[in-house]
Image 1 (tube, helix red, strand yellow):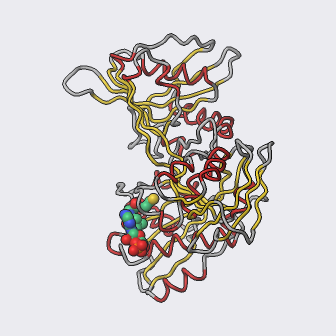
Image 2 (cartoon, helix red, strand yellow):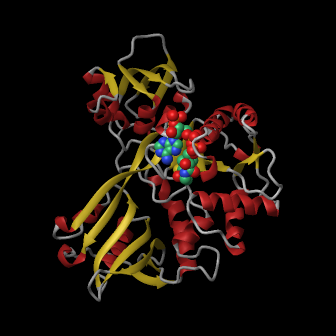
Image 3 (cartoon, protein in one colour):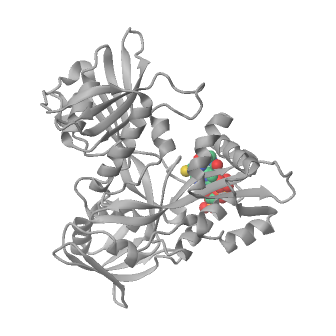
Length: 433
Ligand SMILES: CC(C)(COP(=O)(O)OP(=O)(O)OC[C@H]1O[C@@H](n2cnc3c(N)ncnc32)[C@H](O)[C@@H]1OP(=O)(O)O)[C@@H](O)C(=O)NCCC(=O)NCCS
């Protein structure tokens, strides 16, 4: 599959017509136009309850958005400098899957102004994105979400759960984990650079991941683009292996622990390419002087931290949803990844939008390769597109959805498909997009 540039994909004519009938213009925003770029940035930041972005902050936003298709919704009779009443942007990213990567229509910056909420504008944005992705031949869509109840109605499933981790350092007891390399302090700019480099080398090792981009790494390193607003409390370290190669990096900050002169170390981001790097960076955090508690989020659900300490009960690990996926093209999505076990199952997928709807024979051979074709046959398994999307990356077992009554089928077919889709290591997604 050749990569698709979302910027070349025109706006969806159906959403454009519907919004026009309601008095709105729905159009691509030219990020080279100063006024349009600034008003898009202000609307997007307002939508996410952020403070108005400064000129310095808008510079890296624009750089990022120039690589994406940004759409604004404007009142037809609004002044030329009016903020859009809704925003969205999208780009096609290679999402890692077992055996490689699949092109994913990544959706971000979904906001609707408080003055225009609950009039169906977001529905038009989302449906427009999905139809655009289908028109461009992109087999899968994905997003990270502010609320878990918004996107199921469009066929998205919670597919890449992650873990929030808290460690009581006074109780944990570090199990000495020898690592041949060293941890060293680095300036935030260098941490951002190491995140980018290490993530690029590591991301294909686990399903569910997408490439980061400079502004994302700078933000995690505490460098938001505005020197005056920069978060000076953020510090960084990296792990250098015995051969002198950087294999991991971590940005972190401190907050006061209540009623003590001690601190909580909050990991903003930890990127590790090797087990040694991961052990070294966790060890640095857990053994840090004056720290009672270490907190991290967006960690893999199978992060080994509980096995690096003597007392597992010192580690609280809370699994929560993060990466949401939406299968648009069943054969192309399913054939883009490899599987953990053979299977031969007829699957009925219900999709009220029609994109993934149909009855499909899924044959997985002993090498883990899949062949998927439409059939006219009685299904062994019946599920909705949100459920198919939820199991796609291998992080949610089909048996779990079946136990919840969200999937119907024979026990043998459900188990066979469940075993085939599971991935080890677990899929993960360490950033917001
Ligand atoms: C979430 C948001 C984009 C919704 O925009 P909106 O234009 O009010 O949504 P719509 O009117 O198109 O609603 C479409 C459907 O989603 C539902 N919905 C909207 N917001 C919802 C929310 N926050 N939680 C659950 N359901 C929601 C509506 O009830 C409606 O349901 P139905 O059509 O199935 O009956 C808007 O509230 C917003 O900008 N929120 C702040 C930023 C944000 O969280 N963005 C999402 C980023 S992932």
